[in-house]
Length: 260
Image 1 (cartoon, rainbow, N blue to C red):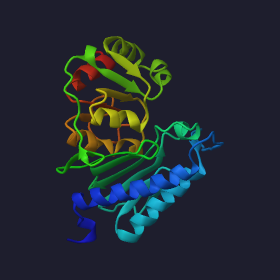
Image 2: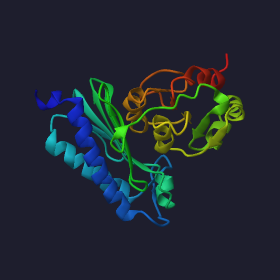
Image 3: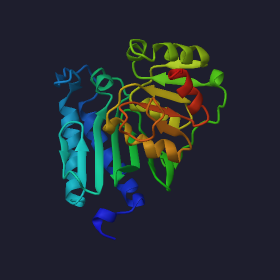
């Protein structure tokens, strides 16, 4: 097997190691209120974001020089490669700069445009949720599975920033979803999707997601027994938004957020 045909199992194993190594760098900068720079889109970035992505890029390029890389901070290299790594060095930078541990290192690997491996590592919490298509989803080494809650009234519904939903076209649907649930919280960014994959919540709604935010959760939710789509119900990581559910509630959530 050539290096551009590496097995998902190998990629799953090595990406978890690299995510944890990157998380160790992030933790060196974590623990107090930081003063970030602002990118052109107004989102914050820190030295930790850049240092973490540089580590991941170096590891990937050294071991798999034929592979492509798409990262939040430094863009794309080796465009058009069959295998492409998609990395978000610190997802939840706003949490990170305020000393809140709900930030994560995200790594995904695509083969021919389809995400086959996903890793979400939370350095401040000591948690890693990782999956490869056909290999299962794992939470700190044990199998991860979504919940079996089948009634929305017993569910936990999450988002990153309620104001984004309440100021957009999905405001009526989001308000109905919150009223229908047992619990609504803003345990957001990547951690919300990880909570769904591990059965600790049932629904996570993200109205704005880039590919590097979404790609890891396609294999993670699939292999945990749930579903991940954009807010219109389209599978994949390029819809610009994301909904994770335990699968059972997915169609109901889509109907509420997108009434005819």
